[in-house]
Structures are given as structure tokens and as C-alpha cells.
Image (cartoon, rainbow, N blue to C red; front, side):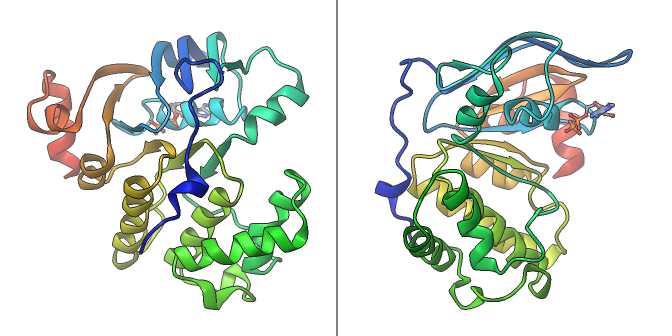
Length: 260
Ligand code: ADP
């Protein structure tokens, strides 16, 4: 399978800086400090994987980037544009640059597969129906589901639904793709196909990826950088060969051997 790299190529961010940047970001729910003065950035075209125990704050980072929740402190910028504070109009503009794929697919159940892919490009990006359908069919071909256009998501397997969700995210031509444990709701035999698709997208496009995963082999394959989280902080970070081969922290070693 190949991916049209020209369609997905990510230009240098307009600011010239990192595409995604978090500076001293804290997030609390009541007394629970979920993110504690977090700093990191992701350059355009890079693939960054967030690993670490459940509850360490990884999903909260993706939710902040999607503006589904707000930080208590700190600065978050996407493509040079600050997310908080920002008007709802500005946030909508920034959100157009971000695609997210969730654990539970979150497809529109009452729409056909094709319509799932055309709805936002038409209503949010203003594409014509024809353009959106053309693009949707290309993407469904890419994810191996060209023959499922007219079906409802509920008639597909979990793995197929997740492929549709990935295609739907790409249909918006995002600069950044956020992936939140996208295989953890799948039956084991369906996991490999979805991970192979994502490997292919990572390898053959310039799209920037931020990926929360417990799939360590996948993380090792696709990542430029791995961030190991613990209790809302980055315990250590580095290229996959370092984090998986020779981590500095015993906690990282223990975590990786427990989930591998
Ligand atoms: P991870 O993705 O690493 O498993 P999360 O970011 O989902 O971690 O959660 C981090 C912590 O924040 C957990 O303790 C979780 O219970 C808490 N949390 C997340 N969302 C909410 C919420 N909406 N209200 C209260 N607590 C939350």
C-alpha cells in the first residue's frame, strides 16, 4: 500500500518554530495534579509517542491540544498559534489543523462510511460534495475499504471501523494527527492490520504524529522520539533505541518490560 505524500505533506509551520509546543503546562482536576509544569515540543513531520502507566496524563495532553479541556497554567501553541486564551473562532481554525483518532472510533453511526468522511470536509472546510467524495474514495482505497462506502459503521468489524476513523481524520488534511490508544478496543487479531496501516502512513507521509500507545513494538518502529510519562511529568525522553534499549530510569525499564 502506498500513500500519496504530496497530498499529506506538511509545510514548515508558519511561525518557523515547532508545530506543537507546551510550556509549563499544568492541569488539575480538584486536588489531582494530572499534568505538572510540562514542557515539550514537536517539530513538523516528527512522530512522537507518549508512553507510561494509566493515569499519568497522556490522554489529557491530546485533549488539551483538541481544546476539549483547558490547562490551569502554561502555554500551548499549535502552528505558532496560542490555544488558551483564544476566541472560539481562532480555536476552530486551529482545530482544523488537528486530526484525532480515538480508542472507541467515534464514527457517526447513522451515516454511511462515505458520508463519515465527507461531512466535515464539506461543512467545515467548505469543499464541494464532489471534491469531498473524490478525496474520501481515495482515502478509503488507501485504508483498504473502498468497497464499504455505502455501509453503516456498525456493519463493519472494529478494525475496519478504526480504519474508517483514520481515513476520516486524514480527510481533513490535518497537519497533526493525534492517536489515542487506537488499538486498545480492538480484538487482538485486528490490531496488527491497524498498526500496519499507521506504520505505512508514518513512513510514507510527512504528517506530524502524537501517539499515545501501549504497543511498544509499534512505538519503537514509528517514533522519532518517545516520552515516558509518570504522574503528570516526563520521566525521560529520547529516541526509541535509547528508551527501549537503554533507558536511564529504572521505572521506564520496569514499565516497558511489564507491557511488552
Ligand atoms: P492516561 O492517558 O495516561 O491514562 P489521563 O490523561 O487519561 O491518563 O488521566 C490522568 C488523570 O486525570 C487520571 O487520574 C484521571 O482520573 C484524571 N482525569 C482525566 N479526566 C478527568 C476528568 N474529566 N475529571 C476528573 N479527573 C480526570
